[in-house]
Image (tube, rainbow, N blue to C red; front, side, top):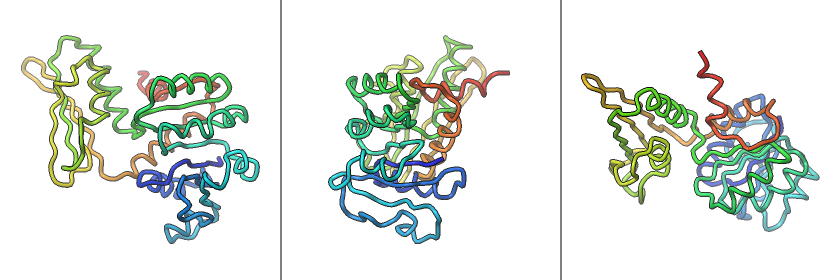
Length: 249
């Protein structure tokens, strides 16, 4: 399956490294705003041998149309910004290229665009594409459905310089009908990221915990999503849509 990657920041680089390790996928190209590294290859950047082209292009010098004409792909993966979808969205949907976007903060305008694009191709969006976080979220919603009156506490821990409340924690709170102000926040040292949901039952406690170790977790999440989108029809999908079949007993 041929892949094009939009964005090559810290997370984009981690995702690219995971894609290169998986033989089911071929990283055809990377498109980024900066001209730094232009026309170099991703394998060369990492200093590894690979038969995959993984050429790096700058959007200031190469249009998405030119790129897709020369190097067609089956999937476009977006780790750029909330404006990235305007660069490739329409042409990707017209060419039936699947779209996987992991942008955290889309506004209503971008969400509506995703819905429109999904009428022509398969579109997936998740603000946090790590498999573990989404498993935690799905399981937490499932448990609250069983026990709607249970006491719930949400804790999130991140590195000392992270500002504001974790977007993932806010998403968990919204899913469980918990006020954002009730999220417990810790900032200390070099913690990568930890989310915990505590369910307080009479005489017992259930804790769901997810802890990030490295950004490569986003790459394994992308692989899971891409594999589960292979046979999906056109439409807009969320992580819950892909996880639900696995929860059938």
